[in-house]
Image (cartoon, rainbow, N blue to C red; front, side):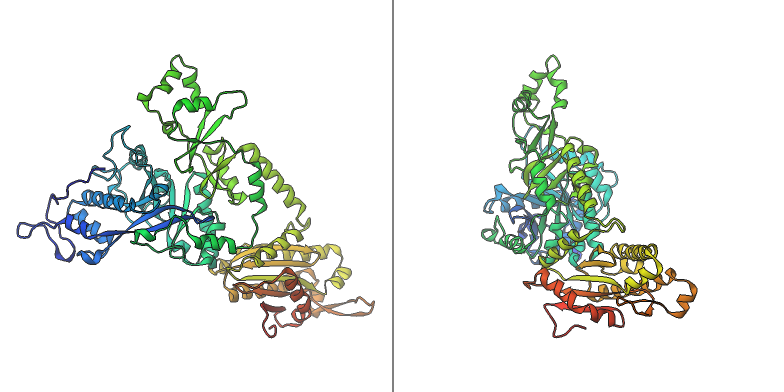
Length: 620
């Protein structure tokens, strides 16, 4: 890269910060001096599952030694003076020089912020390379959404120019800026960095979790990896990891540091958080590990003759996974795409001709990439992408692990559907006992956030069933199950506006039900549970004739055969609240709390008994 001269703030006499003006009566502002006064700090971007450093973002520091308050003010002034390209180029050169002072810099990428106003413009940093010349495969340009790319710039064409030099592309501050989905589509980035607005408090906000989960799924379908910015708490870390985010950046892991000797290549806090998480790998994770094809990858710098050798033989694969120098996946090369070379008269010679380029870049097809722990639903969504017909690349810890073929995915989907059909109540179609047990065990193994576990059943259901018949009994069960499904999906406007948490609804059997909520505001969840019980009491009145409703009850035999009066059908429940933090509780403790407090619930005014574990002196 050539460091361009910045002597000329050409064209016009714009005002700068603090009244700086280039005019005949005042000397030009000395941009090289301003750049020289600045330095760089580096903040790591790490793998969420192993703490290995994937890259460092270079962040400007030292504005107290300049007339500028921050980077935005500096670049705005440079743009007004016509010196934006020169200033940005000089800053990037300075960042690269500092980056090469980091221990292990060759094993991690450098993430550099590129002002959106420079994308594809003459003089933009990194565009002054010649085809076939030096490549910058260790550098990724972050294009922020906080500034618009000029309307006249063809983003796809501009990005191709950067890619020819081996540069990666990231969209920074995703979700809060100008371009949104359009930039995501046109730039075809390697990374999307989710703005910290969506990460802050994500463990307590169901809407943020739903939104981030959707973005992760769509990004993976396009072969894009996700960086969660601004992670500051263990709760945020676990949620981002479990939603399928690939990398993390934030104060929880490390603050930006100008101390080059103190920057690490591995971060113990991430290893410790994963070690502290007692949840076992999911069944989907285990099964995915079993069915992926562990095809040997080819490095992108491999010669094309090696590619021809890869596809030789009767038992050879029809695709070749391509990785960079750090085993990070770049895409696939399909054997069928080589036929035009292999079967043409001079095709083999063309592939071997180094003068036409001997790397594999121009043959790589970008394909969806999913972590081996990605939920199966997101893997299925990734397969819906047009580019996934040949398979999905599976990574583990950010490195290539194998390829999931369409046939293997169909087997996984079939197995999942069979399991769901087996573990599902035939009447209500709600998950059954096995799923409920898994939910409780998962909650007990997740101390990073609070959990609400509610056991709900009908009061005096047997006399109602005996007196009005099984059909009415089934109607009551279905009525309550539909209420529960809507409740768990946060279907009401009030629930959507609140912090509802992650909800799960299950059917134990008969008139026994289960609701679980992880995260969310405890008071709001309890209020919604009380509302659910109250609404069912009102709904159940429709099961009676007008005379019975007016009487407020009915006569029926009790369990001892004696005729007595019973009130109209209602529901009650024991609500076990698991507080955040280590507790050492088991499912036996939860079951005991429920069994011991059923009578309290049926006698309570709101039909709920709340038990907090670790235990309060007495339940409410």
